[in-house]
Length: 46
Image 1 (cartoon, rainbow, N blue to C red):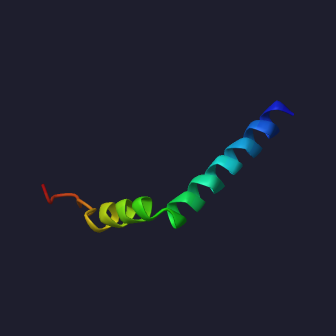
Image 2 (cartoon, rainbow, N blue to C red; image 1 turned 60 degrees about the horizontal axis):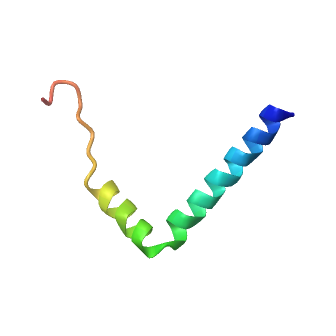
């Protein structure tokens, strides 16, 4: 029971965070900025 309750709580926290990231303009902008500046460093590129 305890594990299931913790799992349920974690799911609710994740859903709440996801909702905030999709609806809060500051978060949306920060996520977009972060995503556009990311790049993959492939083996041998350094």
